[in-house]
Length: 201
Image (cartoon, rainbow, N blue to C red):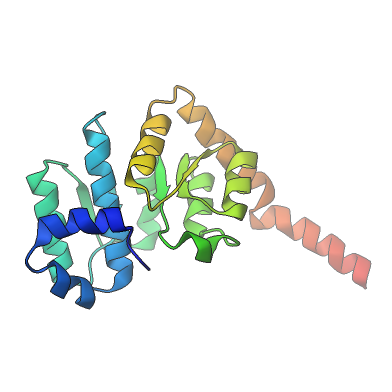
């Protein structure tokens, strides 16, 4: 995954002189997710009071140090949960105002929808996700969030701000939950599948 050039330059300023060396060693997915996301919350917190919670850890200790240092330097007060049991996600989601699914390589996911989005919807959490043909249709039909260019830090920060200041945020979460439970849970799909099987036999 490639990191947006604007973000790369911001990261470079914060990490010189080790940036060039570290960016070649650290797994691309970590740089593509953690670094841009942290910069986006930095932009957002200059306008409204918001807290970013990140569930998951780091595979590279140098990136971890950079992230924690950037957090401390900019007083972001990120809630770092570290590695957690998948079964504990429900309680974490239940405390979230919005859920983020900001995939950087958007073209790759144009015809796919990340599982995380369905998890957010089922839990009644409004979603801000990267753009894509299928996911944009889903978010629009479910009335459950917004999409943004995940490589544009200011657009993403604007999307987070729009959602967090939406007075109908709770309704948006309920729309998503009702929509996903009506269409995507096994009990609903089971009936449809049995009807298809019956027609074919």
